[in-house]
Image 1: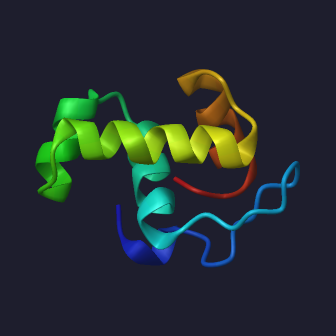
Image 2: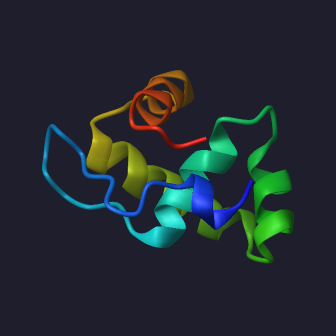
Image 3: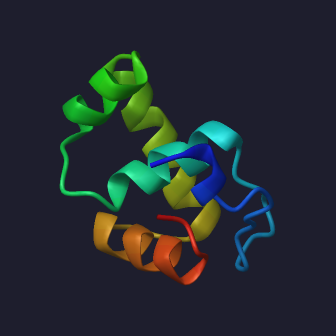
Length: 79
């Protein structure tokens, strides 16, 4: 995954809140078959930081599960 693969202006169509660059990166990571611990290691942060970022993404895009978030990310061109 490269930063170029992440849409720079992705917005939630439900709430209109823009995702931060880091939230887009975490969302892109969620589309892969990895754990939150794996994501944290890749991004050099703690698992709790990733959890907080995932919760923020879910809130902004109106998702309640990882599957919903991944479907939203794919529809938004984030992968």
